Amino acid sequence: MAKSNAPMQHVCSFCKRLVTIRDQYDMPIFDPQTGFAVCRNCIGDIYHFIEDHDTHKAATSKKNFAASLGSILAKNKPHKIKEYLDQFIIEQDRAKKVLSVAIYNHYKRMKYGFDHKDDMAIEKSNVIMLGPSGCGKTALLQHLSTLLDIPFAVTDASSLTEAGFVGADVEVAVRNLYYAADKDIERAEHGIIYLDEFDKIARKSGEHNSITADPGHEGVQQALLKMLEGSVVEFTARGQRKHPEAPTIKVDTKNILFIVGGAFVGIDKVIAKRLQKSDANIGFGAKVEGENDKPKFDELIHQVSPDDLMKYGIIPEIIGRLPIICTLETLDEDALLRILTEPVNAPVRQYEKLMEMDGVELVFEEDALRAVAKKAIERKTGARSLKGIIEDVMLDVMFDIPKTDEPRRVIITKECVTDGARPEVEPIEEKQSA
Ligand SMILES: Nc1ncnc2c1ncn2[C@@H]1O[C@H](COP(=O)(O)OP(=O)(O)OP(=O)(O)O)[C@@H](O)[C@H]1O
Ligand SMILES: [Mg+2]
Figure 1 (cartoon, rainbow, N blue to C red):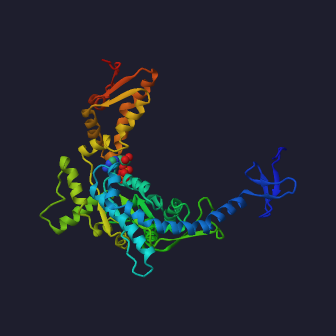
Figure 2 (figure 1 turned 30 degrees about the vertical axis):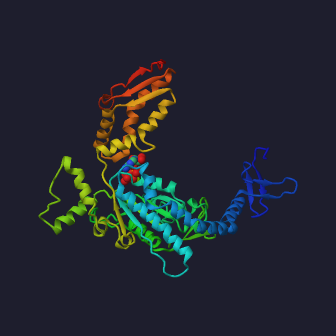
Figure 3 (figure 1 turned 180 degrees about the horizontal axis):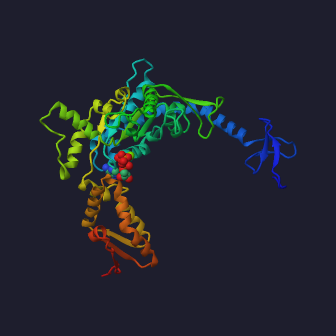
């Protein structure tokens, strides 16, 4: 558009501002003959306006959604949800059951709300999940989100800050849901919000932490509390600057199901302390180091009470809004071994597929897998380190194999994992025809 060196300038026919045109996007609509032009800001505003006020779309989707709830319910019976999760997540049966029931009930509550306009609303039961790092909390919820017929958004609570602080306001959680619902407010108002890393907003002055005041986190919790209790959350569209005249979107959180989860590192000590006080003879606090460390942690975490969460630094009003407490297990060596090979997206299967593309058959010996699991246990990050350990072992193979095209078999032995030995590579003999 601009041919001379100095950028061209032109007045937008809508907002009447003089716009400097550096490229075609500064003034997407421009008719040199009539001078009619629309600047990018106006185009953006028009776009958002149409998107946000498409009432026809909203009305039909509401009707369709209400009508389809019957079949959604039939499809999402708790055992079916659990079966789906079983494909990806090893163990954690209790957590899977709790989540499956919570989701099913959420659908039922929704159907009741659509069918009966009476005031006997069935109350929702938000869920709090606790479990060690790398045991599958985030993974469970991510797989759930791909299954569900309702909008589902995961927001990292550790990124949230009180309004006025640097970071994202708590409204972001609802905004994420609104976008997960394709900007359909009605659907968003019946969706599910998962707040991950929830323990990171615990008050620092909780017994578990130091005694210094921590207004930032307390503020986040207060703001979240309003959302949990059900309030109208107001936010601006994504990418739109926050200024007083900016159009806002309003979403009522009354019917949104909240699931929160976190590792709550150190809560076992809070629980142990309480148990010790209530029964000095049991002596949970007594040192049982080494081998017994893990079961002891699980034993404690299963006994978590609202009181412990409060001591950890979650305000009691929030705990009151999270009636379902669900704890996950520490993954032992056998579980890690299964995670390596069983899930449909298991790490070993992924590497097999990758190698197959180079005409290579990848064989992990049983002790090699066990060695990977052992190493992961040492790292104390649950299943999270499995992939990295295999990646280390596989690096040289993945680098060297593509050098030639001949079909080969690569055998990963225990020594490859424990001592960094090179994997065995052998040619695959032609299949002998009789
Ligand atoms: N029980 C499990 N079955 C299958 N895979 C698992 C399981 N637990 C963890 N994983 C895998 O390990 C990785 C880390 O798990 P995830 O992110 O769910 O941990 P987390 O419990 O959220 O931990 P953190 O508290 O540290 O966030 C993921 O890639 C996940 O697929
Ligand atoms: Mg996680």
